[in-house]
Image (cartoon, rainbow, N blue to C red; front, side, top):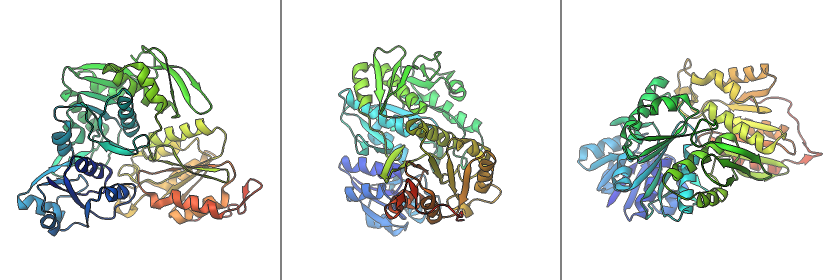
Amino acid sequence: MKVHLIGIGGTGMASLAGLLSESGHIVSGSDGKIYPPMSDLLADLKVKIFEGYEASHIAAAKPDLVIIGNVIRRENPEAQEAINSGVEYTSMPVAISSLYLKDRTPLVITGTHGKTTISSLVAWLVKSCDFDPGYLIGGISRNFNKNYAVGKDNYFIIEGDEYDTAFFDKGPKFLHYRPQAVIISSIEFDHGDIYSDIDQILKSFRRLVEIVPPDGVIIANGDDPNVSEVVKNSACRVITYGKNPGNTYYPKNVRLLESSVRFEISNIKGYFEMKMWGEHNILNAVGSIAMLTECGMPSEKLAKGLSTFTGVRRRQEIVHEAKGVTIIDDFAHHPTAVKKTIESVRQRFGARRLWAIFEPRSNTSRRNFFQNEYSEAFSEADRILIAHPYRENDIPAHERLDVEKIASSLHRMGKDAHSISSTENIVEYVMRGVDHGDIILVMSNGAFDGITSKLAEGLKCRRIINNRSEITPSRVPK
């Protein structure tokens, strides 16, 4: 079958292109500028890419099926041509459901935070239990070195979020994924461009709970009151996990070792060890193991799988080390994720000076929904540099996140914090003040103008003498 994807450059759509290619379909797609790692993935797949969106692309591709991504708007000329031409068209979630989830056992990972890490871990743990699962994940698993697989066995692990499906289907994506087992890791306000308040988000999660069959299971974070609220009328079993002993599964006897974390889990024999840091990652592991324990998988193999899990790209990923300086790349953008990521890095690296560099890029983080929360989120960093919101002029001034106000608030807390307008100026400021032993943590849910590579290149050109940069900060670039 010939399949054409409109908006192929996004993580989900490019990964679906991988599934389709692996299944033997002929795949083409269209998008604007596509960035790594998805551009590399599509190049490896040898997918025909049309630049931009034009009605003529449909006739050129001659597809049997068109899949329209959720970033595509109703007025898109290529989408309109697909609809008007009579060719079969659908959304990404419906395509995944009909082609890869039917007659399988979908394990759906949901929640505001931790979906990609948990999905990657669950897929690896299932693999460690001698299955060949299918999976579709929102980040590149370092164990698999990719984020999709058709798989040969019944299990299919999929990251499910509450964002809308397409311009012609405004329901949440996760409602299409035929959930047999679900993890709900957390529920907070997010996606402010489509949800007006937390009640609307809770409504979406209640709808998810309603479609889990009676013989299914929900693994719920029992420490989260929003999660507890949405699962209370579930028709299926609800198993709780969290840090508190009132949950079915909780971590105990946690020990921080030199290069790993060791802990036990209530109601499971033996101990578990992993190379991820931070309390939130311990809970991610507990939730993953709880799900698969409820699916009947043996604890010994789960423990071995956890010990060999190497994480996900752009989740506390060390991307460069030179001259005593470590650069870490992370996807955090919600203030809760920013806070937990900083805490985790602090736990791992101790008293080393920590730079936190943040780009407000998501539709929620660019707006002022969390104006006050961001100040608290950065409180454990030593130096904070906040970029201006991505495409800030697209956001009305009265709705826009005020990064200068955040920097001023952090100053009043005694922090060295600045808002800086351009990537080049951020790199310049860092290079003027970087010291031997520093940790540079970069957080954005996008490319951030290639800032990690620019920082790495800057370190190559910067001499550090007597544990200090040759040049010290004399001014803050704007």
